[in-house]
Length: 113
Image (cartoon, rainbow, N blue to C red):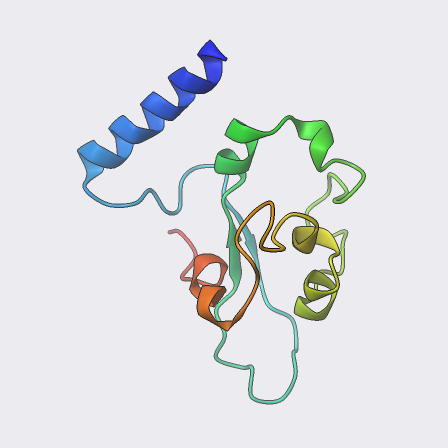
């Protein structure tokens, strides 16, 4: 419990000092888009903030049951996420924010430099 409180305090201080959200932190994973349906060419890649998830959950919550430990080893698609696979296991509106049109920008954004 103390560790969680310390991590939360540290993250709050970082956000306050920077004056903006911490995007592109070390450890973010960028999922480059592969060919998608026609008209989806301009959609940005998904940026996964691994450090935020790791601060809240232990590794075994996701690995290897939901995700293999090798980047690119899973064929993640929006259709599969909406079906409750991969990110959709938690991002279902109950555990974490739902995957819907209004939340696209939470994942699909400019990758960090």
